[in-house]
Length: 161
Image 1 (cartoon, rainbow, N blue to C red):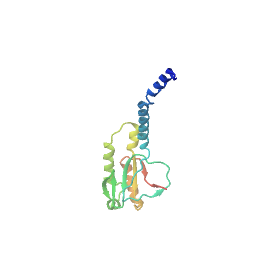
Image 2: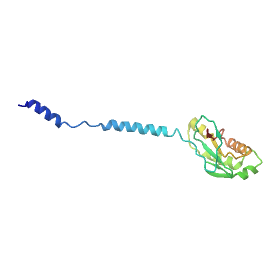
Image 3: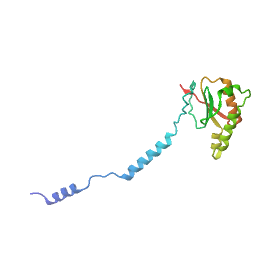
């Protein structure tokens, strides 16, 4: 003969719903994961040189910061992706400062939006991506033009060995 209490207890155990997942805690985990990925995504943004520029190689330990980019190829000089002057004009220029480069960089600096010391520091940084075949005298005049436009921190982009 079967025990009625035992039968009721077994019946109540089989009628219980199976364990459920708490969606709130899962949503919290996914939110934290999403925020972590968004924050750490911007840490490794290398500068990609244009196809016609072959950067020199060097041993570097610092990562590039976001700044104004001046690209110097064998044919032309680009400031922020816009062609400003040809390399023939740079070589033919007898002065230290190349006026089209200086005026374009000054206009970019005046139109940049930002507040505080951090924005001012970013407004004075420039990264020059020069092809390995560009002569140093031309590169020196381009750097002098950057300094004349108020960009005091000049970085040269290289490939990391």
